[in-house]
Image (cartoon, rainbow, N blue to C red; front, side, top):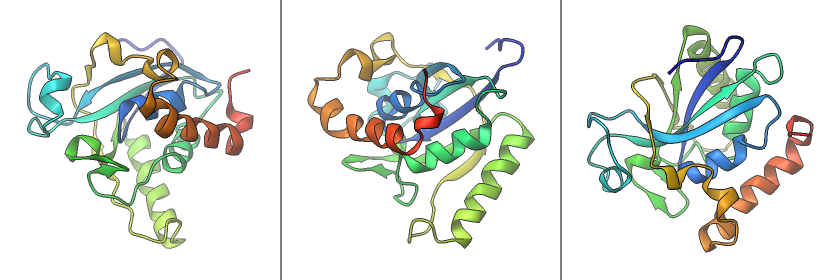
Length: 182
């Protein structure tokens, strides 16, 4: 993947990629969010293949962002505030390794920041439960099928979107209003 000069990439898995994509698309400084699959062994996995949890991939998003407008640290803060990093291989009713909480770092700085942030939240007992989020080197990211891209914004009235994603987006707008697109 070619990255535009001055931009960086963050790769997060925090459950259903429809949920995480919807949150990060709202942020000022985020140029693009792509839903896809990472962390497994199958070449060119499909949604149907990863849904059974046998490929080793997780649903994830790849965020292209301008670090002069929003930092990787700020993205981490929003990532942890908008999913449950204490449930192993689960987000709400979505269960399986494909819904794990994982940060795939693209450079050593991202690794250090992610590990330090998790250590801080652990010391402060932020969630009242142990954080199970794994920090791993980024591997090959496979873009999900077209119908998964920008899913929430195209399907807001669908039941899952209304009941699961809309509350996450509303939480983002309430807590991080200073980070939202104009």
